[in-house]
Image (cartoon, rainbow, N blue to C red):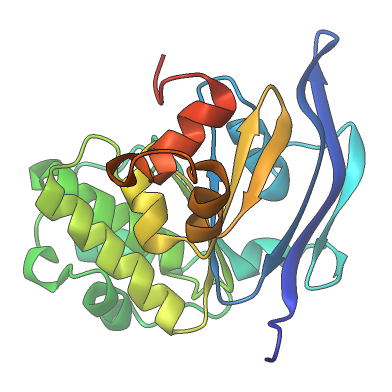
Length: 246
């Protein structure tokens, strides 16, 4: 079996605020072409960890390697980021917004291709303030993909969406993976992690408390549970003792 090369390596990463550790020495190895899920209760340190991986926050200690090297100025050209909250210019259309963001990059994906990938062609001429919540999420995914990134960061991309809109977002993530792209995903939906992720890591109190494929984690941590309870949510509760949202 041929192992995929690592696209991102995180070694002993630490970050504290006012003397209190938010991230306490985590290490991760993420293979190219996979979907990696970072799970955890509120306050576990997920957002801080991801923002350091995105090069938005500087770590107090530790090292992050991208494609085996320290990140340089080219890093931002090779990654796409979808934030939970992004303000869109209301007077622009969906297509105009994509073209504007594409102009920020050296080698963007053709806008028509982005619109195909994210199922946006039917609303391309609509203004941003006229689209639905699900359409908005697809547009935000398009903005994260417009530079044809090798590595995609998605922070709770389907929060608040109805089941159909959520399925549309899942389809886009699957399409990106089929093109060899790597995704780092944070989510509170265990079904989402089960469907999309090759590997998940569960964080609590700034540390990684479990890591592996969803199926493997269920096999290890749910062996003594009734069959109907053997799922990722049961793993999460068993390890953290916390509900998904407190």
